[in-house]
Length: 501
Image 1 (tube, rainbow, N blue to C red):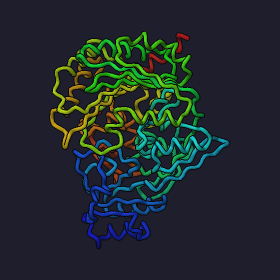
Image 2: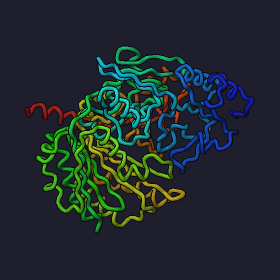
Image 3: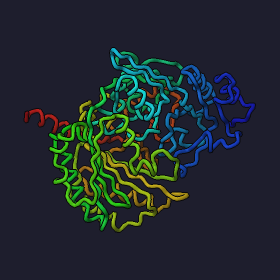
Image 4: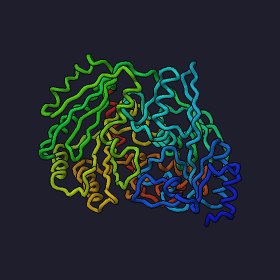
């Protein structure tokens, strides 16, 4: 359907937004792609039929109705950090609902629950919670990411081992559904919708408000980093093996967060310890990781200062908040399986010989577990409760992403998969969308996908909230085997761990 200035779609959207010209844009507008569409991944061209900027839930609902009546797809945009531009539809022809004006915030100082507008960016959320009583919640480190997507697909961050994912903090939502109803959803009200939104939100509606539990800000924290310079990547394999063994210790304190970042410059082991320097020193990190070129520890007693520091990492400075030609892939190490030593050796040898096609690339292993894995696999639609750590690989092209670069990142995943027992059990984190996956929904939502499809068919039977890898309607052809072996393994381990106490 076209979007000429006289079309029913255009007039309907204008009416829904009170004819305020600041709240809508169409392809005929000068600099529409640059100012309004603003694709995050510049290698995937997408042209929506409209970009809207509602100020209220009622306006969101009115836009959804206009789009649905016109037979168009709808996607919400909070921060706009979709690696495949799914927040602007993923393909041409969607109606985009940008939530930037939904910025309300209110803290109940009795329950310490906060009401948060669906367009709030994580950097702003951190400051608002701090100012409302020195409170915090788990979320990622990029300040430009929006809570609307982050807290409806997972939301991993440094404090997740302590507090869970961002969506684990969510206790209630206000959500606009495909039939334009505005409903509340929680564990006791519209529970199926609530379950679906906590892991697959963009397939089911637009969350205009979150009610989240908060935690007291930690006191003293230690931020640490160990840098290893590349002679050859193969020489770093032993250090990675040591890290992997260390973080897989079931007795490792949940105060310890860690990641490994491999790049053109070498390898960095870094993270945050949510405790005192004296406690951190007992871990004897210097002895565990000898051979480092540089070592830094920073002591923070200011939560805002620590959060700001997280946002200044090398990876985020180069790629976190800026649109770029990019490619990304991910793996979730479900079942808490470790990468065998031989596979680690092959991965680092691969990094020595492969032509990467760019100088700007990162391979990041993020430690998970802890509180994230306390939640049952089927308690929310988020499906990676058995992952010990996550892999995200990311590369930026100059002007475009070369085929060599895409092949390089594919090779990283293939090298690991081929060296892992039960490699078919890998999933993919839905926050790191990968349009090249054979079956994205199955990789993202695993054993929870069938229930998601049933709920989708009930609340959005016309598939209004759609992108190329959103939850499909029930009956859509899909692989019949779900990755269950890793889930079974981790359940057995949890039982054995309890018996050992």
